Amino acid sequence: MGTMDSGSYVGGTDVSKKEATEMREKFYQFMMGRNGVDELARMHSWLVLVLLILGIFTRLGIFSVLALVLLVYMYFRVFSRNTSKRYEENQKYLNFKYNRTVSWNRFKKRMAQRRDYRFYKCPMCKQEVRVPKGHGKIEITCPKCREQFIRRS
Ligand SMILES: [Zn+2]
Picture 1 (cartoon, helix red, strand yellow):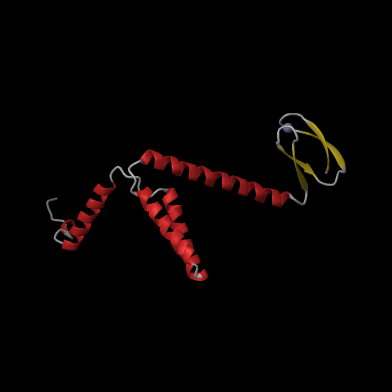
Picture 2 (spheres, rainbow, N blue to C red):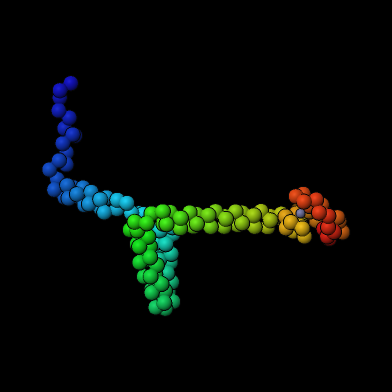
């Protein structure tokens, strides 16, 4: 006890480190009450990158213009003080992303089962019904609304 730990004051007089800390502090102050980088902003930055690459490969100016517009919009959102509106936009994006994943997974599942099953939509409630292939004409009972309809399996 009482012995000085040499590691405790390392960097204490390092000017550049102090400046970096101040910069970070200033930035933190600046970002207070602002939206910051959310998932939507992250997606926008990826899109900007894609547009820039497309611009390079196609040599079409429109992609660079779109990238710039999107970049400005992205920063507008990141620095925006209307955080509830930005939160709403981000939620919409997350919902969209979720739904896309769900329908993609459903599509993949159906592709895997395509050989053995047929898929029909119930004429009453639009519920999707799966029936095994190769049984000729069959009467299908909708599992949801009990509607009966005849289809070729
Ligand atoms: Zn039905």
